[in-house]
Length: 384
Image 1 (cartoon, one colour):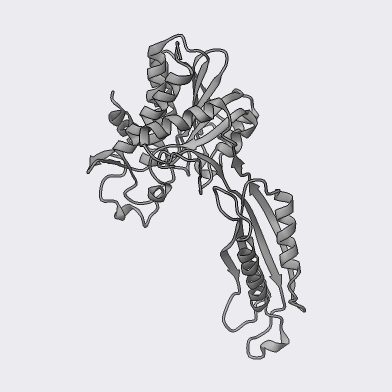
Image 2 (cartoon, one colour):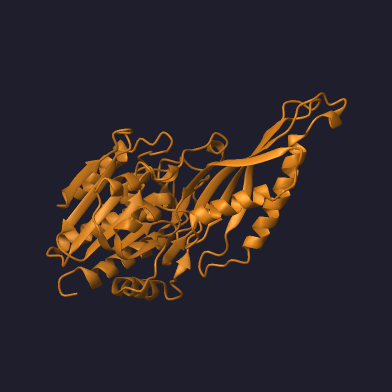
């Protein structure tokens, strides 16, 4: 089948996460790759066997190049379904674009990578090894997908890794990490007819929120060359029970984006310091629930990295990067496998993902495929 038909068939296999059942699409990828002569393995974590991943490989020896894309998508939200102008799982082509849930995130990169595997299989005698990873669980953090595969030894060390995401066919070499935490203020509940007898946890939290906003503004002074500045955002507020009672507890959940090279322990200490610096006596404040997801960066200083950038520039005729990628990706889970450069690359923009009428412009998708083919021709094909 041609590239558009392959992408259409991928879109026609729903793989929303949650629930994260990727067995159908992983099996489709495995059959396609097995049909062209790849060595294929399908693996899943025991705690979620329906989160099936497919790993296909061609050739042997060094260099090892990995093509990585995820096969799960976000689900269609209740208030989103009626906003679609087409069937989200039909793979409709109109006005030069293919529409559908997962069309750009992440089935277009996956389709281009499958086409590249097919081309490589037809060449034979690769000067190294080419590995395709079709990964589950990315949309919910990758813990039971790419991280599990890497930790359990299912993925090889690689000289170059291409993680498929939406970069407008430019080469992205970094994305931010995330620190999450919950802040609590503790007061004393009384009847609102005489509120001064109590200690209002919401009023106390207002002072803490102001301090966190000032902290966010200070972070603008730290600038990474391709992903910008760290940020601190308050995304959830919870507390109080009724208007005629002084609330004795209030909670906010925050999101602190980390730029590459920031130490998560230092960031956690900063947040603790900001919260504890606020005088809210006689109320009390605490912060807990710290979880973090790593940042990723790459130098793009290897021969393979320079070759890939050259392929991009030859195809798009403009600035191919390097750039930053604002969302996260599974690249953060693959850093321990990278003995060379790792990049994030693919067609389209994350701004059209995760919503109604998600689509990929077919000319961009086809350019992605040509870039991958050109890169493999220059690196792994006989006579390169």
